[in-house]
Length: 396
Image 1 (cartoon, rainbow, N blue to C red):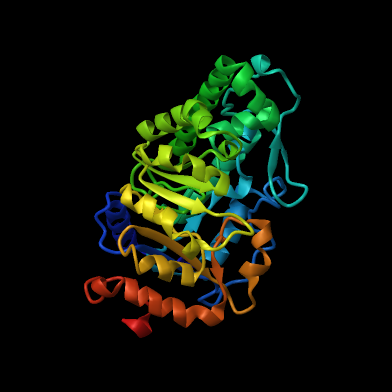
Image 2: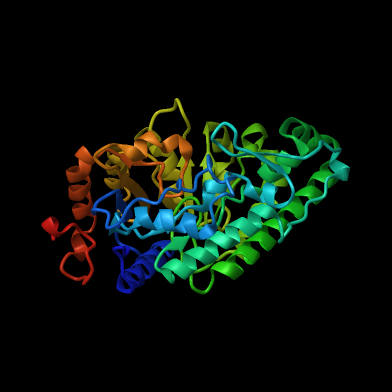
């Protein structure tokens, strides 16, 4: 089976995403992946998809895992700015903690990391382990994917986690909050060690991925030709803007200096207190996640207005109506992605498993025509100019 993509498409992906990062693309980035758009050409492999639920299972070889992914990717259609993509966040958020010796627990179906033992902060020391079993496993999967796909599929960086978030795994969140006041020097020392581990992990894993990987990406799925990553600090939800400026921003600033392109994952209303600080930093874009129980994206226009006016790109997390609302006001700096489910609704059914081909924006197959029309509107300027199928054939 072959994946329905081409080198020519990758050149267009590189061109359009590079322009978007620079603020020079005159339309949004709009990724549409259609699940099971093509009939399978072989029997389904008896191997589960790599996910947070299955990532601990070493019974299957890296080659078998890639074969199962290839079976699914070969049935997918990639429209607009979509591309073949494997999201290695299947090893859970904060996987850097696991690479530094924390214990993984995915007994609930979601990955969490815990320290092997609780220690006083002055006794906690963080060091990236290149021979760690999770690091080794991920590298094996990378190599198997490159052997199978020859650079036609982009494999992402794992979800390494935010610097303070990883520090909070080892120091425990409530204890770390106290140490911000009682042991600020130790907190800075710990966070500096976590940042060093982050940079070592990033370089070590990319030494396997590059140069065959067609670019850089992370759990957010935003492509970049140059080194990039999605930054975050979920721990900051619990601290004041002044504390965030002292303890959160220094490592965020280091990452912005180290990487060519960055997007910031702003998670939950409690983190809005820090937005003004963040918008002064050299961050290219913001992913605003309002959280469960909150109004959807189109109800936060004042937040998007602030992000847009600061010259940052915007990732839209929401449904088609949310994207339409923002597209009407900000037609050039948006990034939106959607997975169109198959007829049986399998993507919806397996969302809780967090497999590495799913998306956090899924629409049912009966909305495919809406997606096609919206995609046509977004890409109207490019119709007739490109030699590759940005649009479904019936809309070209």
